[in-house]
Length: 191
Image (cartoon, rainbow, N blue to C red):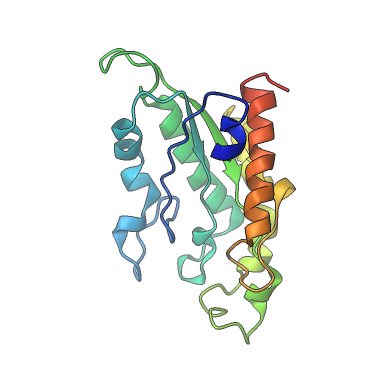
């Protein structure tokens, strides 16, 4: 996305990626350092001033050990957007900063292989394939209820056929171009 945006706009994208991160849950297997809510304010304040905050989480909440429904995940995800929207981490001095604009991106539907007992991680992801189909809709409905901008990432890609929770290189490229296009048109007003 950064490459696609920077070709047409003066944008600096700061990525805060962590494999295994959940929306707001401590992970009993991986540890509480993967709880997105626990670290969100610190991460945002450390990069202040921000013009725009983009959050894409929810895939790891589909793991069987969390036993979450799509609605549970959507509400947790939306609460992160609300937290980000209410923090004074935008333009202005430390004491007088404004909130930054926020966009949430729905995670991609989990690949069908997650339900295949032959896949080595199938037990960890039991039920994820089925639940993931309702996640985008649940996030969009919950986001609209609190006036948060939500983009459905599924319009720009799909999970890999070989690894149902990750993406192919092609999907990464298409996703970046698609999201950049949305930002250029809807956020920056460029075509």
